[in-house]
Image (tube, rainbow, N blue to C red; front, side, top):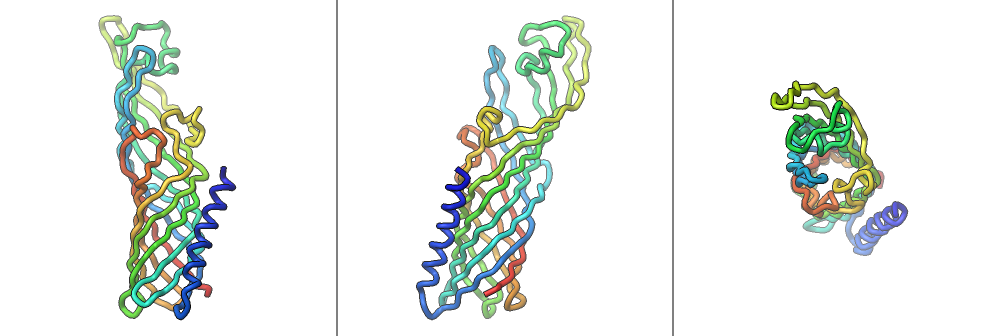
Length: 265
C-alpha cells in the first residue's frame, strides 16, 4: 500500500510539472526546501458502551503547539498573471492534547482488575487525566495556484494538499484517582501514572481511533523572495477530508509551516 501511495504521489507531481513544462515562453523554477511544522487542534471522541457501562464523550483539548519538520522538492511555472507550484515533501506533524474524564471503573479493565474485590457498575467512578501526543508522518503533494507582487518578490497562493500517511501513533500518559464511596467504605485511591503507545494505522490497536492512510487538506500561504535563489514561506493547512476513519470523531487540526526554499534551476 505504501509503494502505491508513493508512486501516485510521484506521478501526480510529475504530471503537474509536465503540464507546466509544455507551456513555452515562461520560466520554470525547480528547487529544494526545508522547515518546521507547528500543529494544534482538538478532537471529540463519541462515547461508547463497554458491556453495560456507558463511557461519556472524550473532549481532547489543545495542549500547546506540537513541533515537527518538513522537507522536499518543489517546481514552479510562472505565467504572466499567476503561477502554479507542485511539491513533494516528507513531513512530521505532532498534535498535543489533554483531556479530563470521569468513568465507571468497570469501563476500564485495568482499573477493575486492580481492585481487591469486584464491584457492581455505578458504585465506583474514576477521575482520569489523559495527556497525549499524536505523531503523524506523511508524504504531502500540494498543488498550488498563486500570484506575484512587488516585481515578483511577494507571493500569495492556495490549493489542495494530498496527504499520504506513512506513520501515525499516539503516546499517552494517564493518571488520576478512584473516587471515594462511603456507602461501601471505599476511600479515594490515587492511580499512578501509566504510559502507552498506540499504532493509529492498525485497526486492532487503534479501534475507533484508526487514522486514514490518505486524506487531503486546503492550504494557503504567503512567500517572500529576498534573493533570486531564496524563498521564505509561511503557510497554513487544515485537513478537510477527515483524519479518522470513524466519521463520528469531530474536531479541528491546523498545521502551520515555516520553510526556506532554494532554487537550483
